[in-house]
Length: 436
Ligand code: UDX
Image 1 (tube, helix red, strand yellow):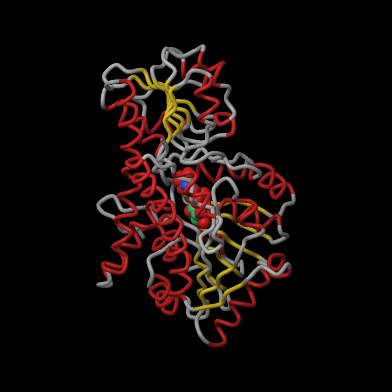
Image 2 (cartoon, helix red, strand yellow; image 1 turned 135 degrees about the horizontal axis):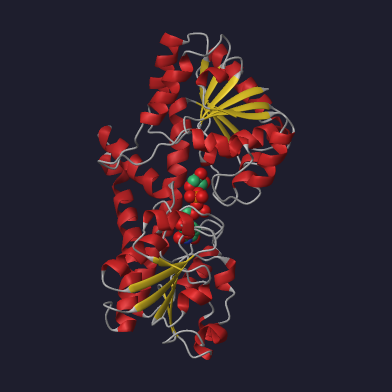
């Protein structure tokens, strides 16, 4: 298939390279000339395992190219729109300017029979609105909505071998044609029996936001239990293991800690709530406001633990291990680690932070913090060590050796990933979240 991918951010860049890897002929288009130049030169603009190799091999195959000119989408048959829908600067809703601009500009370059496929996470109702726009400006093109569920750190695997495919299509022949085209695009996944759900636009849009709302709720549920555990002397990690054995509940996404961040879960639950309010259905998603609040309280709790252990924050030397919102990523969007580091610094602590991948992004966003390249350098003379992003290198750190470098052996385990017995045996005061 001849495929264009409009928007070469995290989602679009991986999608474009993956589609070429699967044998399609692909052009990736983005208005950001610097990003396009980097991608065309085979330089990944973000940290993502396996992406660099796939980008290089797809470019070398001659099936992948990049452009800043929307006119280059002309002549391609399937056009994926994968631009961002960030949280609006002035509220909770999604900022739809990039989606609207992409559709507006793409419409002039469509040919009869083309299929436009929305991949961006959008408020329910967007696809019908955009289908209307296409009916006016490109009546012989069809719109489908095909949400993406990729996780950062597993983006390549999730794109090439997704756990399910969802196609939101219109009724009738146009819808059937769109399904046929999408089946050709995803021939390898469809051929290997990947579950595929064909539905209407609204359901496809809602599948994405409700999946993220569910995941966020699961995390905040266990973090609410952590709050209760802290007050009662219980251990939330044992509690999660025990309830997780119930197959109806499941253990995944029940890791209590400093909570969720990143470019998706926080903004998606806020946008979902904003959209439901617009529809007069605020009560149906009221719980999401609590999910958000519980999540943000966990960040404050880490700051409180540091304060408790150090007997105050002013002048306290704190080493923060991890800055990315999760390991195997350099993404600091809504990162709990960066928020905690900034809150500590704003309260007078002297913070040195480290991360294997996210220092360049973090230092641009938070130039007020001090950064160190290694955990050993970050903890030098620290009064408190705070682990927030569970990079394997930090989880495996030797507490005895680290203890030689700090001023006081106090560790706050923001992800409950360290072995308390081992750290205590090495002379550390260990504090987890939701644990004695
Ligand atoms: C998420 C969804 O998983 C993905 O399907 C969707 O397409 C985009 O949003 P991602 O943002 O990459 O993906 O991260 P994910 O692995 O879901 O983790 C989100 C956050 O939750 C991270 O900050 C992580 O540390 C946190 N988390 C996850 C927990 O706090 N506890 C858990 O048990 C699991």
